[in-house]
Length: 357
Ligand code: NDP
Image (cartoon, rainbow, N blue to C red):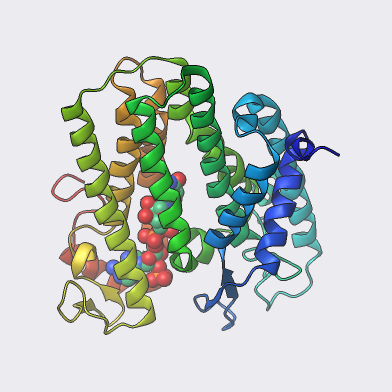
C-alpha cells in the first residue's frame, strides 16, 4: 500500500484513526474537567500539540503536501459521511444508555430528529478517549492541514507564497497552535460543559471548521489579491488586538475557575455573588472573548481585499453564530445563577461590543 492511499477516500476515517492512536499513545498532561451534574469530573488528556507534530512528521514523510488541496471534494464527502454515521451511532447508543446518573446522562426530547441534531450524550467516551474533546481538536488540526496543503499548492503553481496568502497562513497557524497550546482551556468552554454531542457539533467541528474556515485560502489560491504594506500592517494590528482580547479573556476566566483568588491585571479579582468575575475583560463586556474571536476572524479575511464577499464568509458566519450563542449562554447562566446573573448584567450591561451591544 502506498502511503498516499492514506488520504484517498475513505481518508477521513484513516486520518481520525491515526490521530486517535497518537492521542492514546503519546504522553500528555492530564487535566480535570469542570464538575458535572452528577458530581463527577472527566479527566482529559492534553497532547494535541505533540500529536500534531508527530502527525505532520508522518504525513510529511509519506504524502505529497498538495494532496488535500487536490482532493478537496472527495475529502469533503467522506468526512460528511463519517459525521452522519457517527451521529447516528451516538444517537442510538444514547437511547440504549441505561445509566441516567452517569456522565452519559441521556434524556430524549421526544423528537428523534431533535435528538439526532442536538445529541443525547454530553460526554461520550470510546476506550480511553473523550470523543467530543478529541473531535474539536481533530477539526482544528484538519483546518491547519488543509491550509498547509493550500500553501503548498500555491508554491507549486506560482513558485512562491503571495503576501496575502502568507498573512492568512501565519494568522491561522498561530490561532490553531495557540488553541492546542492552551488545549486545557477548552475544558471549561460551553461546548464541553453544556453542549451535547449531536450532529450539529459533530458536523460543525469536523466539516464546518476545516472546510469553511479555509475558504479564504481556497479563494487566494484562485484569485489575485493585492495588499499594500500599510494595509498588511493594519491587518496585523487587527489580528494582534483580536488575539490579545480573545486569549486574555479566555485565560482570565479559566484561571478564575481554577483559582478564584488569582489576580487579574495585577489586582485581586472583583466578583459578583462570589461566583462571577466582574474584573478584567469580564468587566468590559459579558462576552469579550467573542469580540476577540470576531476580530481574529476578520483579520483572516482582510488579506483577501474587498473585491469579493466570498472570503468574508467566516467572519460573517461567526458573527451570526456568536450573537446566537451569547443569547443561549445568557439563558443558561440566567437559569443557573438567577439573581447573581441579574446583578452581573446591571454591572456589565454590554453583551459583546462595549458601548454598542
Ligand atoms: P465561554 O468560554 O465564554 O463560556 C461561557 C461560560 O462561562 C458560561 O456558561 C459560564 O459558565 C461562564 N461565565 C460566563 N460569564 C462569566 C463570568 N463573568 N465569570 C465567570 N464565569 C463566567 O463560552 P464559549 O465556549 O462559547 O466560548 C469559548 C471560546 O470559543 C470563545 O472565545 C469563543 O469565541 C470561541 N468559539 C469559537 C467558535 C468558532 O467557530 N470559531 C465557536 C464557538 C466558540 P459556568 O456555568 O461555568 O459559570
